[in-house]
Image (cartoon, rainbow, N blue to C red):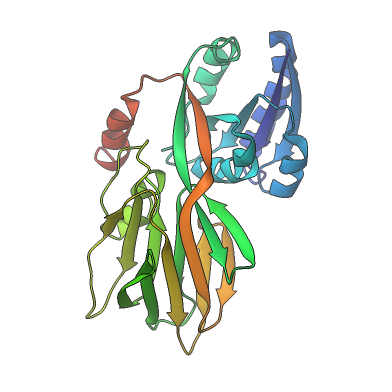
Length: 271
């Protein structure tokens, strides 16, 4: 008997309703089920012990929360899409009803994705599936970001901010900032300035072992954003140290391994 956790988007009524429907259906597939709002990551973490599969019901944002909540336990996630884009999700509601039994029976393959680890001031540590962004706050003025890679100074960006992204995040904010798209299982790290002004303007692809330090200099507010969901106010002189996380996100897939490329065209070109 498998223990399955269901994390749902609490502000999408259909997501909560479908999560409750799944909670009623899965015991017929020999599963023990627990249910939790994806926005309550701390509560989810208290329940993940001995869980063998996570169902994320919502959109890509729900998957980001699920990945952070369960990454230390390396529990596979199946994303069920009720959001708008659904780039990282795996199944529609209709497909979920048809395919969950096979996935619970051991079919499918595991897609492992690199995550980032961000340390703020050497005191607080966060993990991100998409990206870590050091950016300006509400004031529309540039910040200065002194950037060091593996202890060697690179440059001081004069920009709206700097994005450090994973391969998964390469199709998100970094792409909007003209960054390249990495293949999904890549462990390389993207370093990409946001609207740089009279400074180095190109994205860099760094090796998996790279350690990036960002030191902000500003006379107004700056923000550290983790996956666009955890946002912390920074002061001038604060330093963020970013590297690959020791954890990885694992997705249980029903689609063939090359599905990423057809999905890429469907999501980014056709619409």
